[in-house]
Amino acid sequence: MTQDELKQQVALKALEYVVEGAIIGVGTGSTANFFIDGLATMKDRILGAVPSSEASARRLAGHGIKLFDLNDIQELPVYVDGADEIDASLAMIKGGGGAQTREKIVAAVARQFVCICDASKKVAQLGRFPLPVEVIPMARAQVARELAALGGRPVLREGFVTDNGNLILDVHGLQIADPVALETRIDGIVGVVTNGLFAKRGADVLLLATPTGVETHQRA
Ligand code: 5RP
Image 1: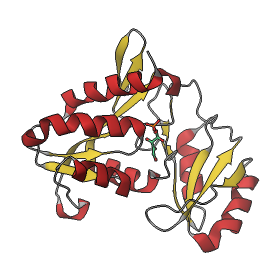
Image 2: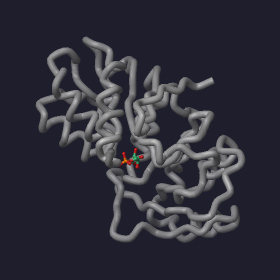
Image 3: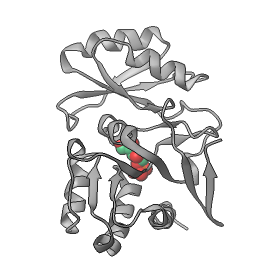
């Protein structure tokens, strides 16, 4: 099976978690795109979706799925999204697509976070994937110095502006032994909007596509 076939397989499995008659939170990326395409087949059974990026909003709207503003809703039963890395505690690195700020906001509202990944994303320790950090443009150099002091090697994502008008520093070489502590530490740097560690609010369910089928892992 190709990686795309694995992504599609796990995305379609996640349709089982969609609550009929409700609004669903939808992530960003190639795996989330397969989920959006699958969601289109049951669009008459949901109220609509809250997207975590402009790209996902366009794809959802292209399928005729109604979009909701997060400010206009009271609750969100489920959020479905991919990840760049995920560990055994279901802590993640996200933001490969630069959408982690809105992803983290939508995930914070959702009662259940369902992460959809192919098996290549499962790791023993987070950190091989460079950690994306969204920064206010005028703080870029100062935040980069602070991240270097933490032992990382921040690299500006060239030619990229987030949906919020900010920049991304991809931080290489971090030793992430304690994801919750590092997430908190980086969020405390003035000028950081959000970092791509999702440890304080990790996934509740991981659907992991393997060549022998989709495994389901629950947060302990
Ligand atoms: C976007 C994300 C994505 O979930 C992550 O990058 C995984 O993407 P893909 O499904 O394309 O592998 O966090 O900001």
